Image 1 (cartoon, one colour):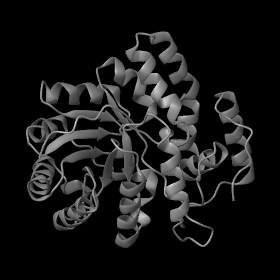
Image 2 (cartoon, rainbow, N blue to C red):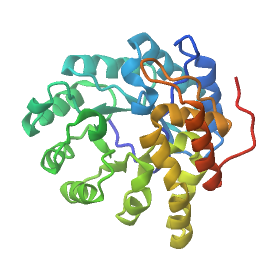
Image 3 (cartoon, rainbow, N blue to C red):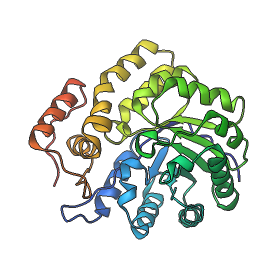
Image 4 (cartoon, rainbow, N blue to C red):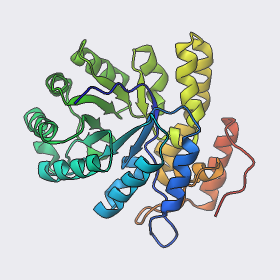
Length: 305
């Protein structure tokens, strides 16, 4: 398999549900078509912000299929296919590959977290990468898994010909530097997984990101990189700092419900979160709206049904 160079911004796509807790595939397609208008590198289907842990396999594969069919030519379709067992991960990854996915983002197994040491993770990713039809990226998201893959393990795994990168969502710049040092000059996509680390990561030579904020504020995320690469460092930093509170709100304080509400306000289709997650309360909606206004990303648009 040939190496895929990933440069630019990728949204971990939200999954819209209706008020009856059912998938709203029409809204998913609407979002893809709207994101196609931006200079994004591609899409992540079935990420943490996709509420993927609440989806059936049938729903997952339908989302992959729709994304592949409706994405703009040239955009990467990355799919979160990590499961708890090696076998289940291989099976789901190959089903996504058969639907046209370009690469797989595979989260660290975490249920038996105290057993997920370097040896276990190296064995897991190596076997998966050996047996799947598309390239693999490691997904390190300690906030949800409470498993933090070590630079030592990444140093081993980055040499595998079918492991082409890593999304580090820890938000830790010191750890990002450790990962960068571990991969050395290897051809490997080291990507950040949160907008809070985007500008600092660019200064370290990171060129790719998968971040929740790109769902509702794709242009601002793109502009930070474009301005930085054009040498307009102060402009890049200004945009980054301006939208930083929005990212903190939709990834931390208000979570996925907040991210979806921000998408609704900014003319995307957020829809409902799937239970047991809770919708935002009215005061939370008002507070988040004020954050969007202060960040100068709010548009006077009525929220779509």
